[in-house]
Image (cartoon, rainbow, N blue to C red; front, side):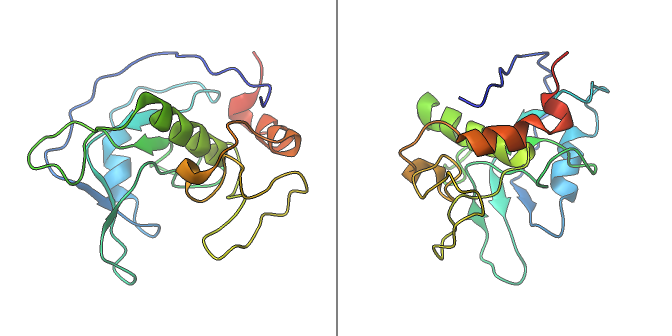
Length: 171
């Protein structure tokens, strides 16, 4: 709905870490480690990494909590942890359990995270604060909990914001 058409450019199998991937907003080193061996890519390519259990482990506000997806910077495209990160393993499973999440739910979260990468913030936050865009509401896919959103697409203003990101340029 945003006028953008994603396409798969390449699949690169990386060595998956044995331990949980622990990070927080002030320390993305564990995420940067995941992509350090990824080959150079075009500016219009967004790395999407499926790897292990993603634990947001903030030392101040702890305890660690599992995430359904994470984008280190809004907009994306800067720093060593450049990309969209999705869990590849269930944090609550004993042993190397696969993530048991419906494909539709994963797609919804991935679209939400790609929205962050392309410059969007949450349409509504946990405290009820709304974004500054005039055509979004609490049911938008950019809800702070994407699974609670009933809308599957982006608003026209969100589309314009995403289309200005260098990764969205048409080639």
